[in-house]
Length: 358
Image (cartoon, rainbow, N blue to C red):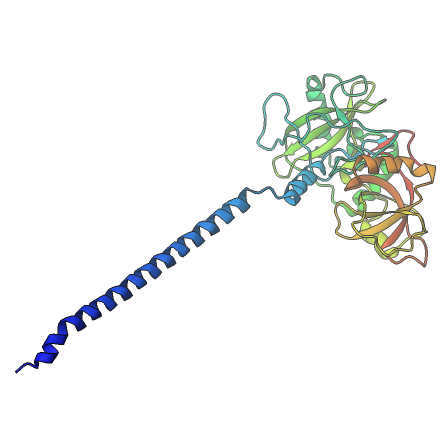
């Protein structure tokens, strides 16, 4: 027979068990829901953070893009030859057909070139940038002269000998020995000519200068400085186009010559005060060759009047990545190998114009 006491107690026990089970299930459900909510919130937060980060503007990236573009602008120096645009090619739209290699320059008009107080760096606003736009000091109605400009530039790049190339460059008599020396150690490359890209007039008192882009079928486009001569013909600036220096940057650092050597360099104010052998009160620059990684420090006496044009160019370029043509030398046995003396400045940016050589 069934025990009556057990039978009597079974319903309450089952009821308590059911309540306990229901409570446990409810607790588990609540915890599960909370966990699900936390997981969803975490996923949403991660997604929002990623979206926010992707939408933010990175100032360093923006500056690097701007600097990279500005590097291809004309860096101007002040002697008888137009200097190279900075490393990057500022490329402007040309009128008429537009090729897929054409690049639009960041400014429809570049700042006027300062022949007095220079200033600047190619990346921030190089001391050598010129005002773009037709005037009595630039190439008038430049688009109407496109055919002549293309003939000159194409002739230079298709020439297979120094003597032939000289017919298309500025100041050929002075440049001849420089070209002969340069091409002893550099290949005389020829590329498949495609077209003349954009062309722009450049403002510089006393000169009729311009920018031009050479477009090739088998190489990257090249930006050049061109000059219109009195007879209406055009010549390109060779020295700036190859960033000509008297010796290689590596040889200069290795041999540490005491006699000044000419270089086209990029200069900036050092982020930190370097340990150099510079005389007290000297202005110190961080300089590098546009095609090399080695950085050295160069100093000059900012009170010396002959360096006023240099200060002007640095100021115009906000002391960052300013293209300069300088004569550099080591200060003698005391030189550390990372500290050099600026003996002189040659022109504006990388451009040498008449009457500004040291």
